[in-house]
Length: 245
Image (spheres, rainbow, N blue to C red):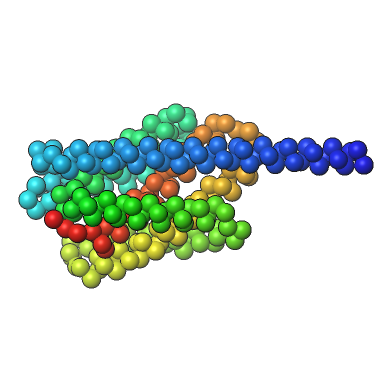
């Protein structure tokens, strides 16, 4: 009986340690994501509110990108692929620095919204996105339902809307933009819950190994995934509900 009690006590202690570690891990994920969001906002606002700086990337009147603007527009996508390829070679500190650099470049690519949309509508859509993101992420974290099967479907959806968005750069079809925006909101809403559950499950599976280097990089990768979910959901909602200047 004493042995059974000892085993139960040890198991309970280990479970408590994993729970505490998971909370710390998730706090790091959300904290890193929040700093990235702040960097993106500051860079976007600084460039978007300064016509001289904005003119380096876009025509201030038409907001059409120049060559440098096109580079900045697609740079975040290239950086995401580069980050995924290099994550195993980077240290945790290097991965975090890369993420903050990515968030800053993303701010450059989004700076035009401060000219195209009213400040009030940007704030309102940001608030709506924040509330939706928090609810979806909380559900993904707490639900007992296994939603890992959503992954393949959602990634296919992301590829579909990415292709459609690139094609519509040249077509400039309002109908396509509207459809892409609706689908984009739904897809990234699903990804928010999916990514949150995946971050949680990955931590639980690897916590027993006590690999601090892996856990550190996993937190950065998790922050990047949730950051992308938030940014994309925000941009699609802004296209749907934002008031233009």
